[in-house]
Amino acid sequence: MLLTGWLPLGAVVIPALAIPTVYFIHGKSIELVCVLIATVLMLIRHRKGIYRIIHGEEPLHLKIKKDK
Image 1: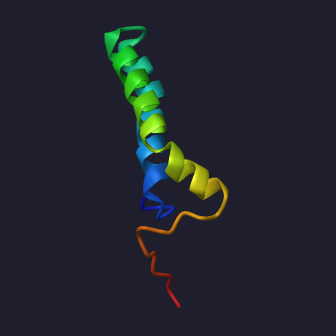
Image 2 (image 1 turned 90 degrees about the vertical axis):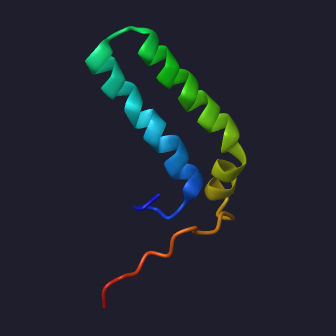
């Protein structure tokens, strides 16, 4: 979210980035299954926001200040 300003994108990207990390640390284990389930749940929870981002309708939740 800090890079894009869109809350739904950050809510989905963070658990998705955890998948390879957990896989490399724990391999095929229950931890990986838990992270996969969490990622799917985040996608389901934020699907409307992701749809709005794709269609350019989602407002930025964080105003990023640009240096002049």
